[in-house]
Image (cartoon, rainbow, N blue to C red; front, side, top):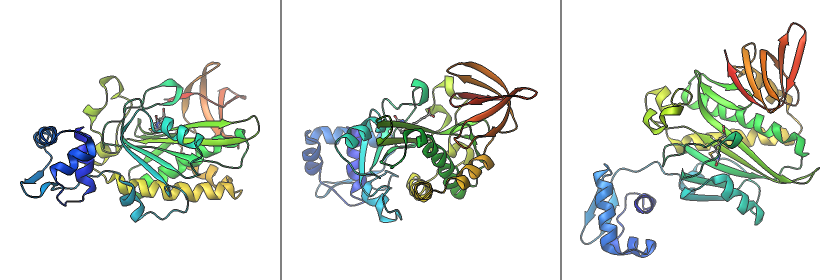
Length: 322
Ligand code: BTN
């Protein structure tokens, strides 16, 4: 409830909104609204009240409201339709049902918070309120299902470029698609597919970026392995600007790929890699593989030299670097 009140105040962009209007929108009593406003103030939000005019948020939050995103978004399809939620279990799940109902390519689903954020390999993705970018895009590319991994590659490249452009942080890509700052993960990509053997009905491209989380926002068990851009920079970053930059880069690379240009993206992927040349231990569905990460194949698989002259091709797995 508090988050919904915050979103309403934020939406009003510093203007007053009456307690009556808030209670009507949220279907709660005016005294409940007052109680939540009091709690928000105690949390540090500056909310002014006037008996005649109602409430207003003094300092603006960095919420991801659709019309604010679109105001300066220079894309043709990505984010032309936006669904924004204060809280969702997972933006991928919501995007899937929207895709099923026929939402067009480029539809963007955003949540300020995810209560059941999904990571790869059945893991959980920590997604606290208004601290990161947790979103999914619906794509309907006219490609074969086996080429869908190329979309993950071009997404990793777009994320890396947008983040480096904005922050100048030395962010690198760990195979297959994690972005690392130092040795800690800052972004994740989860691509889910719906289709037949030879056609794709739709893809849901889920992206998580740890933007303004502090160390204590992560469970202790993860702190060794994950971090955020704000921790790396020593200051907060505008999620809105980063989101726009990512969507723009992503669309540029997506269109290039659909136009038949993929090799330059593969080159960029290799150039930003922190995996190649390193000693790796890869947990694959077929067991553990250790060796030197030599190269990437055209299809995005990883070539590992396990012994002199012996090369294994790995299509999926989890890499540990040494
Ligand atoms: C990974 O394990 O590296 C992938 C993490 C993907 C997280 C994002 S956050 C937005 C979208 N919704 C989800 O439930 N997961 C993805």
